[in-house]
Image (cartoon, rainbow over all chains, first blue to last red; front, side):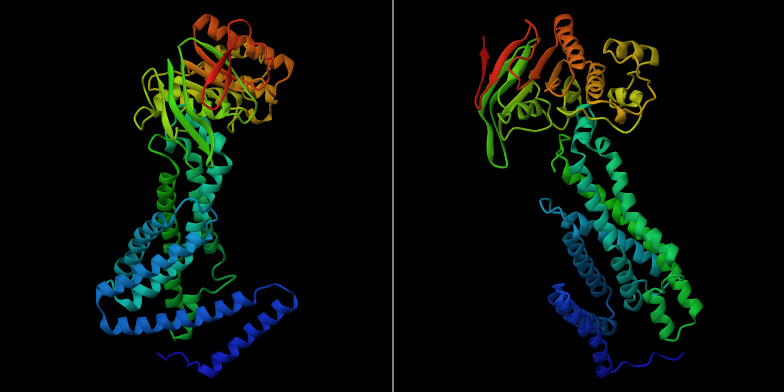
Length: 258
Length: 217
């Protein structure tokens, strides 16, 4: 099996030319994106190199608890990114978001490495971290969208929720429609992604494997697994997060709090 | 009997009611008046168990709102919001919504019975299958009132029920409310910012202040 051609540091610098181009456009059109472009570039470079070094380190150590710890830290970052995307700030949604992501991503990633790929041992960093990372990266928005939807629906349609409550509904009965709507909103993007994959875009993992010299058909199998598991992780994560966040929106006496 | 003891409530740190106490004996017909923003709607929400006081208490026949009592308590206290709220679906579904959360064994009304009730509210011309969302405000208000009637509550909390209604709708609704008090001895708290609301002789008029309600003679 051949390996990927090395990218030299000077070669990488050429990629930065396009960032410069974007910067010039932003300046000329007064888009005020220069700062974000700068910090985005800096963060991309440092975060990825940092991850690279951490992975090298963990590959060498090869201990299950360090691998899982790294995964938990990655999920915590994902939860704080998701929280940042949610406009509602009065309610602290970090903990419910983190817990639902942790539960669903752990289960889904374990399933991929242990049951589908059957890696021995299932926590082997080379598989667990990249596969888990893809699961996280692709369902942050699912989680954010579903929470955002739930909170804005409860707010906008407060009168309707309170109508049900005043007719004797429990909190979960009164918000049943909103619960379903929020879960659905979170699930749709991963289903839409299945429609376009292969036709409109080649996913990152598949591209990477092909460049690294894998048989494209093996890369395809991995990608199919990823796409299917993304639907699963988005589903589990959104159901959990919507459930936990809804608990925070109502008092024990079934009163709407948001 | 509704008993409010030393209740305080504020909206965004703006006190609305402060150290407010009031006892309302069962079977009283209260016409509650006062300028807009004086806390009438807030008081109704507190009585309906949709808000809780920051301090003090609200009890209905000795019971306060709790995790265990909440759903049952709210069913015994019918609350009509200022703007009538309809759910997606037919008129039948909208009216029968009162049975959705009823104790097990409660049978919903048959169509014939429902039509008689609609007739009484001068809504006999409506089809039960028509969409609830497409009606006029007056029609919606009367339907939401019917929804509450079917719940057979002890107390009716009506927030400006006739404020946005045409004359006919208002008269029909007033007649029904008066009958509830006269024939069934229900407690009624009828909020209105209009001084001259014609509720008849039966009602006792009160004016709401921050810390008490004063009866007007």
